[in-house]
Image (tube, rainbow, N blue to C red):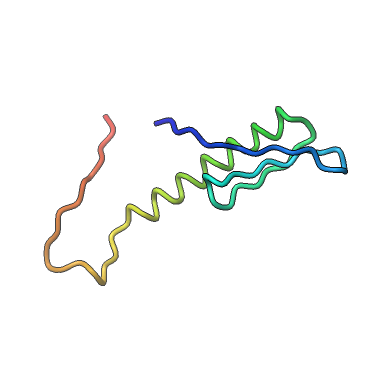
Length: 76
């Protein structure tokens, strides 16, 4: 699955680049070049999105009755 994440990149006075995103909470990446910064930001975004998807997909045991329906995704 692919998703588009808007990244804001700025050059800091120290000469390094900083990437942040309003689309992915917690995404902050820093690199010596724009390319390096975007590569780091991509890795961080992937990990944060995977973590958020996992957290949203977990049923809360306390709110589940004796039976429930759950969409189970199986990759073949």
